Length: 385
Image (tube, rainbow, N blue to C red; front, side, top):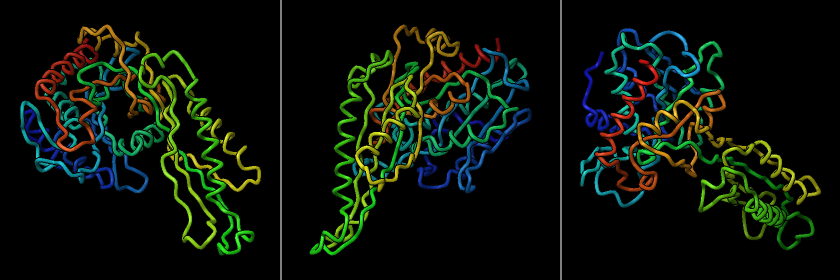
């Protein structure tokens, strides 16, 4: 069993790992496993398909997943976004204390929450647990919750998790029960190359793609008219969003382009069916190309998340926070995927998403410390009733 560090020192160790999503997360995962290993603790590694990355499950307490309200999962992702942008005032991978904050890549999103979850777990009295306490740390959340998807697809059905899940996204210590999803798609338009002096011998893929983009623009306007109940919690953008994000095509100015690729992202509201939106887009695009020269790929589906106010984890957390208002966020998280496993997920953690993914990312020290107490009380409520 490794020495249990104070919360700040553990956060410092985690930030020191460059776990950018483009790299393997095995080094930081190995540290997590070594740190948490002790008697009566079960550690399971869920590898990515190529073996370069891993989800880590650390469990203790009684066997099984508990009853409908017992047990707790503390979930976080180990990956971070790149720190190559200009504007950093210190080494991004060295935790720095400045103006009552901890600064470093991932300090806010979301190694602060991971550090707290690890230390609460490391110090829990296993003999007092009447329901299981589980840590789930994923890879590639920043790339579209790829690790969580791998976990959901490969977790044996005879190894259920406790139903209550706290996902440590930075929410400024608010309980968040809704978030939008994020679907990504790629449309490839095929044409026929020719010399630009003889355009009648070719088919211009970029011009055909322009018709596709126009049809998507009309669909985006239709999306703005979509209204469901969850939209009222997203005051600034109370509708699903369709964003044409990238276009690439052509090889030279004097060649009729034979290929054009259009990438788009869709943000469905909580309660919307992602597959229905995908079919809507496919149908719209197909109508803009009667010749069948278009291929449509679904790159990733990160579902929206919606938790009922009556869910035990939400009711308990709201009570601890004296929170009476429902909150929603526009970003996606692992919670959207985990809820497809029948789990009840709530977002909660120190720090603000507004400083995540930016230079000098930070977590307020006061929020970091207060979050620890809240997590401990949830463990008592769901694992030691």
